[in-house]
Length: 387
Image 1 (tube, rainbow, N blue to C red):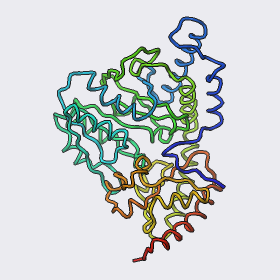
Image 2: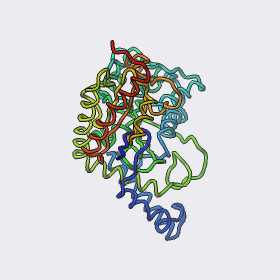
Image 3: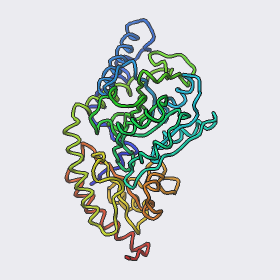
Image 4: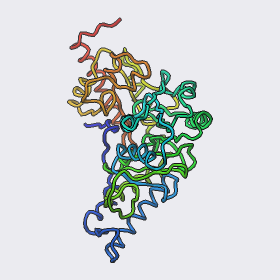
């Protein structure tokens, strides 16, 4: 039996999404969307239809939506596009200390333009410290980035309160939020969120990899980073990857249409998983018990190294990720876990797992059978001594 829980890194493509995409790989709308003949018109119509479906799922006007290939491109477009969009008077970027690496790297890249990056601390559950945010926001603040849901520990930030602080302390600042771990897990209307720019990623709603999107409010004036001809995307010129766009729209539409049932199912299985794993001695949950994304389980196992756990579990058909998924090959502890106060031992022994709408009770049963045996073996090999 195999159970894939490494959904932070990549997700399988459900059959209905794949089925919706397949005609666009050759038999349908294979023309260029800018050309004025029937096949071109068919391609243009497919792009516009998919953009409309995606915008509807996000709750934003289609004209406020821009496509990119992934969250890295979207984050760079958000930060650098703002710089190109208007004259720069303010040169400080404020981030939460647990931002995903796409946001972190894109913000730090602004240092080459003379910007200063300020990281705001969080509490032991990953909630942004409101007093520290207020102190960090000044009249020199250009933009603030706080992801609504932490990709790693599932913390659901109180966006309304954080945004109110930013508006009071730095009313001209832009508020950017990576919504990739909120979309398909929380109910929202993008246009009603107290942010200026939001980012979403296709694969995190079980769409194809290689597709993402950015939406912006009226305050955010963006300029494209790339020079080139475009068909329908002025902010990210080049040919649209129509099959991926169709798949993204299909997955997004399904995720929001089935939101209540999916989240209830994921939360129930996630709670079973967490309760079972915390029954293993010397374990701790990373992130909050409540105000947490319904799919997220991040647990530290003292006396067992995270990479060793992933290998041991893989040998028994259970696939998980160690620490921060994006830093897993760098052999350093997760910046998110260090930010919430975990010691290096706990951070190195952390495992990130995410539940999908397609997992079953039998899957959780299998994981809860494999994990205690795996942790016991690894602790014996490491010479772990109980305190």
